[in-house]
Image (cartoon, rainbow, N blue to C red; front, side, top):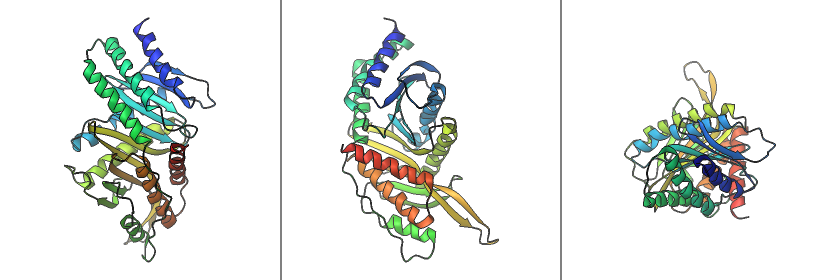
Length: 330
């Protein structure tokens, strides 16, 4: 069996682990395809576009992790209206899993972790590099843990945090962020596409070596790059972008960015009003799993919608989180 055939065999094992996994691809870090396998689907999946978006998922956030002085991310989850792209960097390659999260969630962490172990060894053979078995085992265990943690935790009930009594939208949003009941987010903010910070908080759950403004700005740039790159994917709007890193096997951290609606800004000099999309950004520890974190962020976005009005992409984000939380208990 050739090395390429062996790679395809391991990709096939990941594909078979769930009928809702539509395609598995291996590419280099620039998005150039090495191997792929998929099943028939009503969705038109363009492998070249998928690998391009996956490459952006890693390159867009490199600066974030470097500035936070954390290890490079282990895995990214890019949720669209129709699918989720799960991307894992393995040596000099990117593994992308195209998954219909609305039909089945979470992923099979044990099976994927095992496949990653064998796949890493084959990739080293493919590129003529050498990695000792201890490092391969540590890497595959980190991938397994990241997938487990992303599907774990207690569900947070749907709640509306009120900004009643405040005179304008900005002050109502400020009050919403003051009223959060679940202390699961370390640093979080609302920013415009240009990087203007609307509101932000630091709950000191994690000590970071940069300012909250710098963290928000870096994450906003990464998210805007992902939005731009994914426009050609034709799988609906980008609903959330989550990347996970680990300082060690016991300390996993995540960064999330998601659309939160359109906020009106008024020029005090001219009275002219403009509406800008605002993005919710957060850094969080994965100590208790991602489900309560996703649920709390859903509640924040849902509450903001009550203040600034309905937005179809923000509503789609809320529905995607409801699907993940519901599937966790099914």
